[in-house]
Length: 76
Image 1 (cartoon, one colour):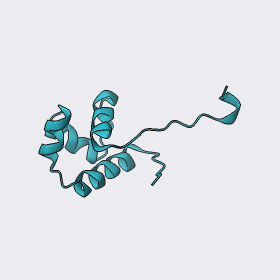
Image 2 (tube, rainbow, N blue to C red; image 1 turned 135 degrees about the vertical axis):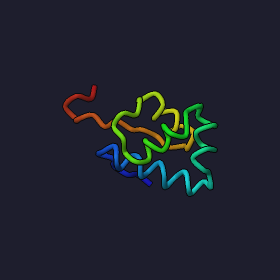
Image 3 (tube, rainbow, N blue to C red; image 1 turned 90 degrees about the vertical axis):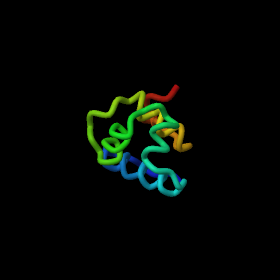
C-alpha cells in the first residue's frame, strides 16, 4: 500500500503502526537497527531532531521504502 507522508508526525505514526504490526517492541526494533530506544520513541512521536541516517535504518529494517517523486519537468 502506498502512503504519502508529508510530515515527521505522519512518518512517526507509520513507523509505530508497522512496528506493532510486526509484533516488535521499541526495544526489539532499536536493537535490530543499532539505535537507542529513546531515538525510536522520539521518531515515533514525530520529534524533528531525528537524524536521517538513523531514520532510514529504521525504515529499512521494517521493510518500508522511501520513494522520491520528482516533478515531471525535472525527470530526464
